[in-house]
Length: 57
Image 1 (tube, rainbow, N blue to C red):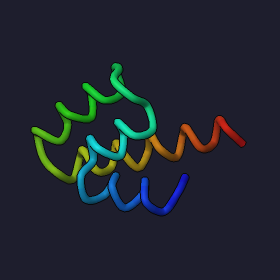
Image 2: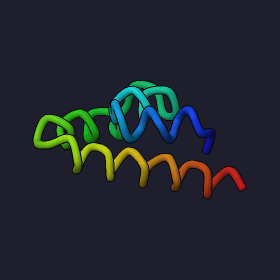
Image 3: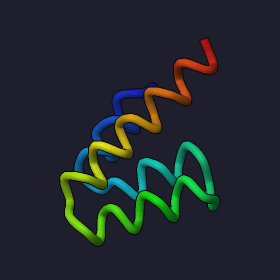
Image 4: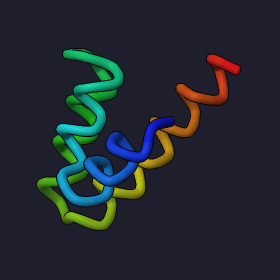
């Protein structure tokens, strides 16, 4: 997980998820959570990026 992706995941959650996953289910879930509130979207984005980096190691 790069620092830029982490910062984007916190500040603009859908952008951070999009750069990691592209267009897909994870992005749409994150957009829905971000529309419900910035904090749920940010938590999901950081979690998704962490899971992706965990799989790559």
